[in-house]
Image (cartoon, rainbow, N blue to C red; front, side, top):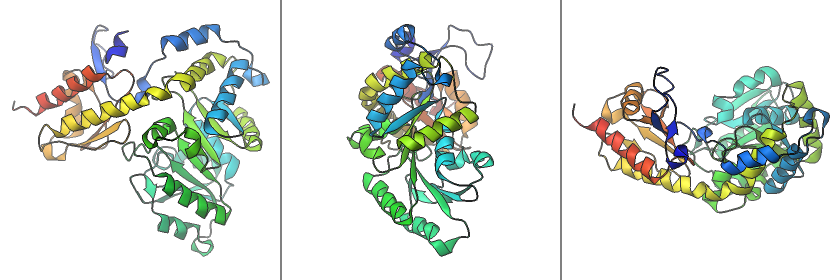
Length: 363
C-alpha cells in the first residue's frame, strides 16, 4: 500500500480539483491512520449482535480487553474520545460544580463547550509542559477559595497542545494525593495514552492507576477507523452506558468498528516507538536548517515548529509546503504542528525536511 510507505493518496483538502494521482506527506494528524489489512480481516470475520440491546459480542470483547489493558474493572466503547470525556464528566461532576483542568488541555481549549450539557464550570490552571501548577491547583481546591465546589480534576497525557508531552508519573501521583484528600475524583484524557506509556516505559495501567477514570482513543496512532474507550469502576461504567444512550452514542452492529479496535489494542501499541523516533528525526532535521525555524524536541510523536524568525506566517508556510507535497496544521499565525504516524516512514521524514529547506531558499 502506497500510504504505508509514507504518503497519503488523494486530492489536497484545500484544492478539490487536484487529481487523485497526487500523493502527499500528510503530517496534519495521526487521526489520518487507516486500518491495517489485519483490521479489515478481523472486521470481515467479526461476530455481530446489537449493542443497543446489550449484546454485541465483538464490542463486549473490546470492552473487556480495554479494561484489562487499563487495569480497570470495566470499560465502555464510545464513538469518540470527546464523548468519552463528556460522559466521564457527567458521571462524576455535579451541576454547578467546577471541573479543574490544565489551562491548555484539550478538554479545556476544545471541549469545554460540553459545559452546556453538564452544567459544570471549567477552571483552567496554568501549567508547564502540560503539568498543571500544583500550588495553583491547591489554591483552586481550597474550600474557602471559591463558592463553587470542585467536582472533578482532569489530566491529559500525552498533552496535545504542549506538543505531545508526558507529565511525569510523580506529577500524576501528587495530583491524585491532593484529590483523595479533598474527596474529588480524577479523570485522565488519555487520547494518546499508549504513546505516553511507551515514552515512560511503563504499562498503560500504571498511568491509569493514578486516576478514577480514563479515556483512550483508538483512531489516532492506533489506526482503528473510529471509537474510544472509557474505563473505570464497574458501577460508574454502567452509568456511563446509560448516559451514552441518552447522548445518542449507542450503535447497533458496532462490532464492525470494535473489531478494528481489538486489533489495534493487540498490535499497534508496540510500534508507537517508531513514530516517536521519526518525530525526533524530523525535529533534528528542521533545527538543522538554520535559525529561521525552531522545532520543539518531542517526547512522543508531535513536533511544533516556531516560524516567527522566518517572518513568514503559518498560512503562507502551509501553501509553500503543499506546493512541495507536504501537509501540516497551523497552531496560530506563527506556528505549525507536525505529527508522525504509521504512514510516515523514514523517507517521508527526509522528504519533509527537504521541503522545509526548499521553502527557506532565496526566491
